[in-house]
Amino acid sequence: MRKIIMISFLIVAIVSIGLFTFIKSNPPLVSGTVGSSGDKHTVVVEIGNKGFSDVNIKSVFINNNAVP
Picture (tube, rainbow, N blue to C red):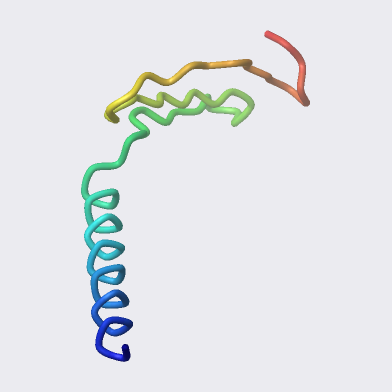
């Protein structure tokens, strides 16, 4: 019984480490360009999708939750 528990724990640990390594080496979302204006009032951030599924944007808010 103890041997089965140890083997199960080892399998879960190996799968978890493999999944973590895969996600760290192939991030689903990546940030590209980050820029700001000279007076630091405007910031532009580009985010891209490199994952297996599409990203659906539900809403965009600016300046204290105002709709653009």
